[in-house]
Length: 230
Image (cartoon, rainbow, N blue to C red; front, side, top):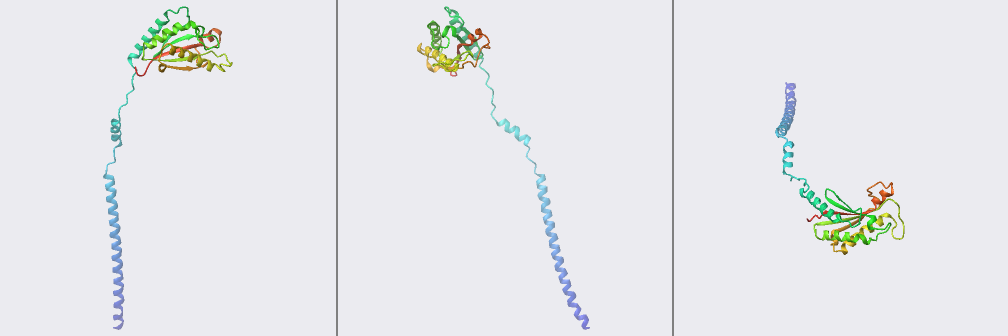
């Protein structure tokens, strides 16, 4: 009888420990089930949310941008340069012995060319007196057309020059263009309408292979164009 009474408390202790462990395992199982359920729910929400459709957004953004149109050339520009050419041809129609002056029309401007042989002595930048009457006509034309601007360009051949006045053709061409500009200003042209450039031998019309071609390359060009304000 004593042995039976002693075994009862031991069995009771083992049962309590087992119940405690079972409760703990059940709680852990419930915890992991809850975590798994939350994870499934979040994944379902992510998959159910539609992704933004960039193909619809991009066209809308493009439509909202201002349309930049290319400015077409003024249809009146061609007729304006044509009128310039006609007026300048009238100026040189009577050359009064000044041979070689030409007028050439481009898309945006018209060029009047003064060859060296009527304008300057070789290697010099002092204008010949014989060209002054023609420059006076050009000055009068510019004064009566305030919407014009004139770029005067000096050009030479490729023969080197070096003296106490001009160490290179560049200086000679620039001085020749400047002297023509000064003459026009003296004849009443607004200096703000005139600019000058010297190109030396770097923009030839011909190959510089013969003396005749070199002579044609030695020139001053007056480039007439419409001012931006016109």
